[in-house]
Amino acid sequence: MNRYILALDQGTTSSRAIIFNRKGLPVAIAQKEFTQYYPKPGQVEHDPAEIWSTQAGVAAEVISKAGAGSTDIAAIGITNQRETTVVWNRKTGRPVYNAIVWQDRRTADFCDKLIKEGYSQKILDKTGLIIDAYFSATKVRWILDNVSGAREQAEKGDLAFGTVDSWLIWNLTKGELHITDVSNASRTMLFNIHTLKWDEELLGIFNIPESVLPEVRPSSEVYGRTSVHFSSSVPIAGIAGDQQAALFGQMCIEPGMVKNTYGTGCFMMMNIGSKPIESKSRLLTTVAWQVGKETHYALEGSIFIAGAVVQWLRDGLGIIRQSGDIEKLAAQAGDSGGVYFVPAFAGLGAPHWNQHARGTMVGLTRGTSASHIARAALDSIAFQTFEVLVAMQKDSGIEIRELRVDGGATVNNLLMQFQADLLQAKVVRPKITETTALGAAYLAGLAVKYWSSMDEIRKQWQLDRAFTPKLKPEEIRQLVGGWHRAVKAARSWADDK
Image (cartoon, rainbow, N blue to C red; front, side, top):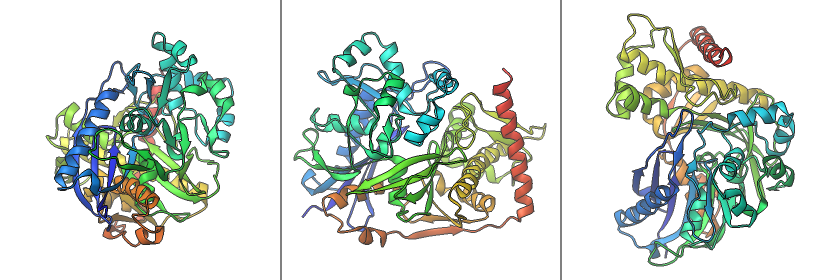
């Protein structure tokens, strides 16, 4: 009897592998960071070979840590940083260029051109997305136009494009499978979320040949089996982009349920059921997952910089030695001392969508200390989340009374309490905070009948702690007013150049 499900969680700064048992509990975890490349300001790249080698390495490590063999693994589920774009040669399996990361802004001017040419509504209608350098389409186009010989190879059918899930599966199956799932496809700006197919008109707008695209599959089914790296072949049976996987892992399977993941970025998602809703508040409409013939959609607010602001305090400013030190340093200040920090290092995401905005700190005085800056950095994560939640309530017409949270920063009780205060809603942290990997595991496990049904896995969700609001509404109004002024300053800096 297969004892475990293996989840491969390929993130923006590290590759992780987690083995889960039948109760949905992690048995073993392995993680390895990989190199971030910044060729020019606003550009972010990864080496696809390093993504694959670190992911393959932690997969082997975690099986060993669990004292298991590949015959003990019932299935593999894959979840991944979304939008990050890899283009490789089908014959050699080698990338033609580094992976262009979702945070990369090199195609912002091209996006501005598309907006000026009047494509915004057409692209929104078909994809649920706002034109932005964040998504994959302009990144693929950039590679085809800027890498010598790439467009010619693509026209001949020699190149393959994929988000990171496609790249991992290609390598796991030695090139047998070039696939993605509906959740990842819906983040490319090339996929029609109504027909659930690649869209010819969009391919024409971005000048991308159809031959480079992966086949789009549901999020939970047996796609094939591994042909490398495992001593015996293992079914690959679940795929979802990281935020959709977290929504599933949090068991937000009913319309109106909301989760927020605090990772490198911050991503809030609301399950909106089986029909897409067009946002009036500049949120994204995206495919959540497809299980069997049933497709669920979600509203999403994307915040580009969340946990990354803590990494910047550690690596850029050097005011903390480890990310975990931030809570202690921030607590020394009591509050931010009137300092507001808008971490628009990669532009502003939802609901502003200003790709030219840059990081801004306001309210500094001679008395401002490292602890005030640390507190303002943490507060910025909660303020950005607040703005998205307000927009989500407006679009859905649902008052959100509970927010399920996950991701690395949720261990920070100071941040979680401030989040509950700002939202004036309950913030709920589950016992298992590895919900992104767990979502991928659940999708894979359902496909191979490791778990019998949604009902079985729904019962596994357990509460760790609930944070309830303590600050008065009047105090919140003042804090939010200050934040809005700070955001205005960040936007002005970009607009007045």
